[in-house]
Length: 91
Image (tube, rainbow, N blue to C red):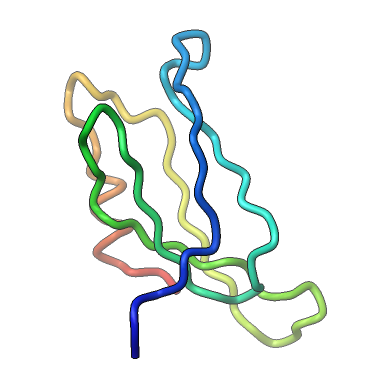
C-alpha cells in the first residue's frame, strides 16, 4: 500500500473579519470514504487530521455516527470535547 493520493489542495487567507478562520468546502469526494487532511500556516504544518464522508443517499442500513462541538475557548484551553471525539474514533 503506497502513499494516499492527493485529491485536492488550495490556498486561502484567514481574515480578521472571519475570526481568522477558514471554511473549506471539499466537493467531488467519494461517499463513505476516509480522507486525511492537514494545514500549513506561516511555516507551520498541522498534525494530520482524519474525516469520513457520509454514506451515499441511496445506501440503506448503514449507521452514520456524527460528533459535534462548538465554541472552544482558546485562551482557557477548553478543548476536551475534541480530545474525547478523537479518542472515541467515530467511524
